[in-house]
Every structure is written in C-alpha cells, then in structure tokens.
Image (cartoon, rainbow, N blue to C red; front, side, top):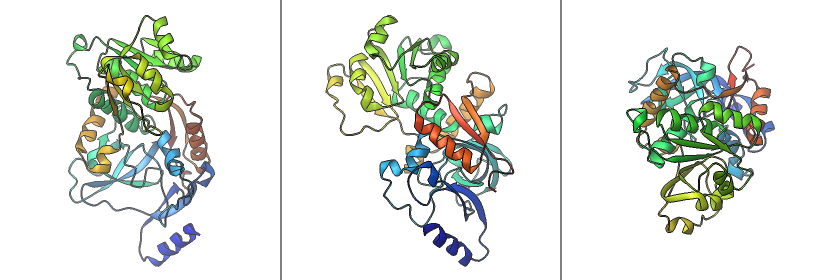
Length: 364
C-alpha cells in the first residue's frame, strides 16, 4: 500500500531525519487518520522550523481529510498531514529568515498546500507567523491564529471597516454575525465590538449555551438563526443591517441575506457557495459581496507579511485583555483525541475552539 511504499522510500534514503506525524494516506473518515513516520522538514529561504507544542482544529481539517468531498481521489505517495493552528518554539531558521530566531515562542495557521501542524515539527514561512501572546500558554495561544486572521481580514479588508483610533470613532452601524459562537464568529464578535467599536453587533445562536457565549464575548443582541432572520431582527428593532459576516452556510442563508442587507452595505462569507449565487437581489441595494479565505495570501505569495503583522496585533490585544481566549475544549494530543476532535468539528455544534496539547505520550 501507499504507506508501505513510503516507508520503503524512507529506508532507502540514508541519514534522513524523520519525525512522527498524524496524517492520512487515503481520503475519508476520521478513522483514516494514523500515526506515521515522515521526513523531518528542513527550512529553506524565509522558512522556519517550529516544534509544535499545542494545536487546534478548524472545519478545514476534516474538509481536507475528505478532500473537500472527493474522497475517491488519491492522496499520492506523500501522506497528507492536516493541522492549521499551532503554537510552539522555533527550532531552526532558514538562511534568509530575519523575523525570528531559535527559541522564539510563536503561533501560526500555515497554508493548505503544505504539511500542517499535526506533527512533531512544521516548516512554515516566517511571514505568516506571529510571536505568541506572552501572557498565554501554548495551549491557549494555539486556539487563535486561523480564526483571528479570518476575522481580522474579513472585517477590515472584505467589509472595509476602518480601525478607529478611539472608541468614539467607531462606526455607528450594525453588524450581523451568522454563527457567532463558532471559532471564527467568536473572534468576529470580539474584534468588531472591542477593537473596531461597531455600535451594534448582533450574533446568531440557537442553544442557551451558545447564546450565553456570544453575550460573554460582547454581542449586543443574539438572535436565533433557526428562525427567519428578518423576523428575528424586527423583534429587536432592526429592519436591516449594514454589515453581514456569514460563518456557517452561505447557500442556506443567501436569500435571507438579500432581504436584510441595507442599501450600500457589505457582505462577507468564509464559505464557498455550492453552485452559482444569484446576485440580482443585491443590485438595487448596491450591496457588495466578498469572500474571506485566510489561506489566500500564503497560497499566492501575496502580501504575506500582513499576516505576521495581524498575528502580532492579535497577540498584543490578547496580552492587554481586550480579546478573550476562545478555547473551550482541551485534551492531550493522541491519535484517539485527534480523531474525536475531527468528529466534533464535523458535528457543527462546537462552541469556540478545541485544542490538543503535545505531551510525552503524543507520538508513541
């Protein structure tokens, strides 16, 4: 099989340093994740090698594991290693790296087309890495990178909301966050309210515990996304909203979005549409629609250093107590706990973020 061929290749390569990692040699369910022996990467150019000490999960983990629905495709001869959130320590630096040195404590999300952080070590371009929040453990810090980058980019770039110099300069507008208790939504609510100082932040949630979570993070109102959004908004005194940050299912909410978006307003979604979207409802309102995809910059090598700056800004906001940590589930990293965490992500019911901590038993 593919893993057997891969191990033979390792054996035939003399003096190759190896490491342990959790990955897949076949796309499919969580049971396909296995503990593997793979080559230990060496940083080149502006890359750094990070020893992962804690990792966090996101929906993209199980989507990659399922090859975004095409499970019949071949992984190839190199195992696929997921993991798009990590906090750890710099072990080595590439010859052109200048932002970090060996021993620095860092956190990062990574990029889809490279091996991820479900491994002892990960190589990553330093321009998409930030210094870990000084006041947070590796465990807590690992919950932040992907969701913080997504929330920050979506709010300040896709929705084009300016960062005010003082709370009084915040926009007197209304933001609706669809799925406010999820990983991304948890950061959108906080950044919108506590950093961008949007006057009214409305989150959606449907369970008592997720409603309470959204309120804790700073939402001014919480409405039920299982009901008609326009009706829910009317109940709290709003006929429409100026910004919408969609974090769950774009197709499911698209009709409702067209109904409740205000004229000259902006919409952003982190979910790819299934099939063509009907943009006609936005025409008369001159509403704008954008996607937010946090992997765009590293995938295309475009303005990558901006993610370094965002992560450092988020670290400062975390250290100053402005942003609350979003970790809600934590366990030691093992094969069993990783498989379970994948299943939690697939359930769509997880509040905040699930974190797995590396210990002496993780890769045995």
